[in-house]
Figure 1 (spheres, one colour):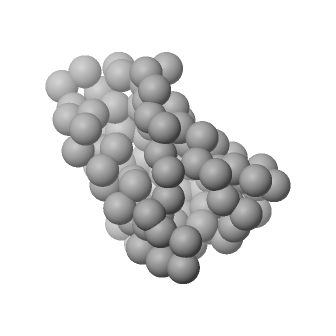
Figure 2 (cartoon, helix red, strand yellow):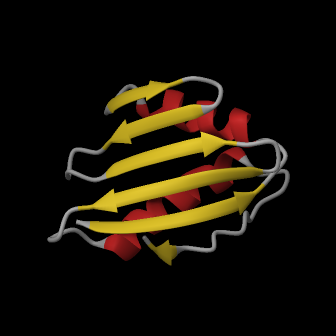
Length: 96
């Protein structure tokens, strides 16, 4: 498994977390509150999110045979759509 971590600066972390979780809840296994969210992708990847007052903290776990760069892009592009007023958001992806 490959672990990617990002801390995304935003004042709207909870709103974006909930919007993303609701958006993907029709196609994937999702659980979320206003502060935390988890999404399981069909390819075996997992996205964990935590909303703080000034950041959205993201942990993306991708299987060994998965495309880490593509999964990072999928997550970032979807969040940017919900954050259109302040997009593009800054994703400082790091290996976990």
